[in-house]
Amino acid sequence: MKKHNIEIYNKWLVLVLSVFLTACSILSKPKPPVVPRPQPVVLPPKVVPAPIAGLPAPLFMVSKWEMLPDWQTLDLAPSQTAFLQSCRVLKNKPHWQEVCIQAEQLGVNDNARLRAFYEEWFTPYQLLNPDGSEQGMITGYYEPLLKGSRSKTLRFQYPLYAAPNDLLTIDLGGVYPQLKDLRLRGRVQGKRIVPYYNRAEIDAGAGAFMGNELFWVENPIELFFLQIQGSGRIELPDGKQVKVGYADQNGYPYVSIGKKLVEAGELKLEEASMQGIKGWAEKNPDKINKLLEQNPSYVFLRELPDGLSAPLGALGVPLTNEYSIAVDPRTIPLGAPVFLATTYPNDSAPLNRLMLAQDTGGAIKGAVRADFFWGFGEFAGTQAGKMKQQGRLWVLFPKGGEPMLN
Image 1 (cartoon, rainbow, N blue to C red):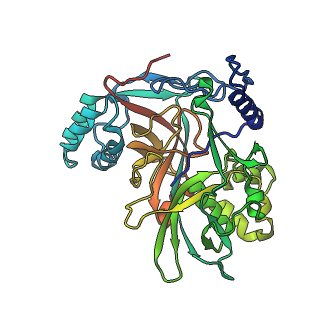
Image 2: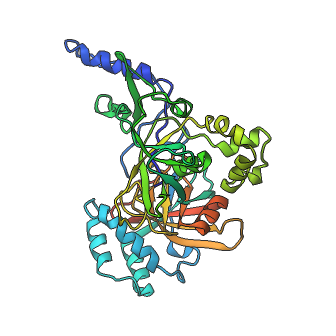
Image 3: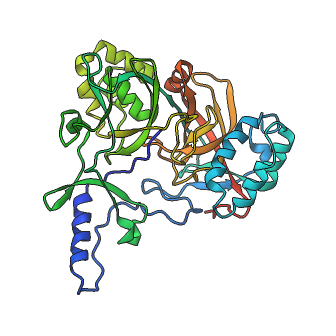
C-alpha cells in the first residue's frame, strides 16, 4: 500500500559511510569518529514532535471536544472498526493496553457509548504547523487495478519488480546515536557503497533485475501511479485478481511529475491531478519516459496473500476504506486516532471524520498533512485523483501518553 515508507536520500551518503567504515577498522583508537554536519534529522523521544526541514518543531495545542466539528453527531462505528485494527499493534505499547481492552468490549453500534469512550480515555490535541498555522494539505490515494501477466507479452511489456537482493538498507543509528532513525539505501560497488540505481537507470535495465519481475503490465503511467499509491491489484488474463503492496524503495526522494508538467507549461495548475496527468500521457506517449525519469524514486512491490481484506498500511494492518489516512510519523504516531476536518474533493461540503493514522507515504511530509485512503475501484480513484483540500487535524492521545508541549 501506500503507500510506501520513503526516506530522504542525502548527498553525503558516501562520505558518511566512509567515516563509518574507517571507524570500524581502527579498533585501537577509542576516539569517536568525526561526523559531517548535515541538516538535523535526529528524532527526539516518540512523544516529542520532531523538527521538520530545519524549522521549529510543530506544535500540539490542547483542545476540547467541542472544538472538533460535528463531533456530537458523527457516526463513529466505521471509525471504531478501523481503531480495532490499530489495536492489533498498539495493545502491547505503553498507555494503550487498557484503552484497547476497553475498546474491544464496546461493540460498534452505540454512538453515545463510543463517544463516551473516546472522551473518557483520550485528550484531543490540535496539530499546528511550525509557523503556527492550523491549515494543511489533505490529498487522497486508493487501490488501483491494472491488467497484467506473470510473463512478458506483446501487450504486457512493463515490469513490476520485486525488491532486488543487492539493495542495502543502512541504519546509522547503531554507530552514531545522533543519526538515530536515519536509514539510507545503497549498493556495493567494488569495496564502496554507492547510491542505488535511480528510476532512469532501473527503467534502462541497469542492475541485475532480470528474473526479478513479479508481473508485466501494459501501461507505464498506470504502473507509475501504482507505485505512488503503494498498493493495488493486478488482473491476470484469466480474470483472477492478485493484490500487491509496498516492499521497498530505492532511497531517492519523491518528485512530483505533476509539478514538473506545470513548470514546463504542459498543464495548468488546476489540471495537474492524477486524471490530468493520465490524459496528458495519452496524448504524449513519446514523452512519458522522459517525464517519469524526473522522479528518481522507485518503489518495489510484493505479492500479498490471498484473502487479505485490504492493502496493508505502514502500521502493518489492513486499511479501512475512507477511515484510514497516511501521515508523517515524525509528527503523528502511527495507529493513533486523528480527527480530520476538511471538505470533499473539489467541493465545499464538509468532510469531518474520525480517522486512523495507519500508513505513510513519500509525499506525505509535514505537520498538518494527510493522505485520505478512498479504497478500491473507479469511484475511489476519481475521488483520490482530484482530492487536494485544505484541512485541520486533531490527534487523540491516550491519557498518560500525551505529548510534551513547546
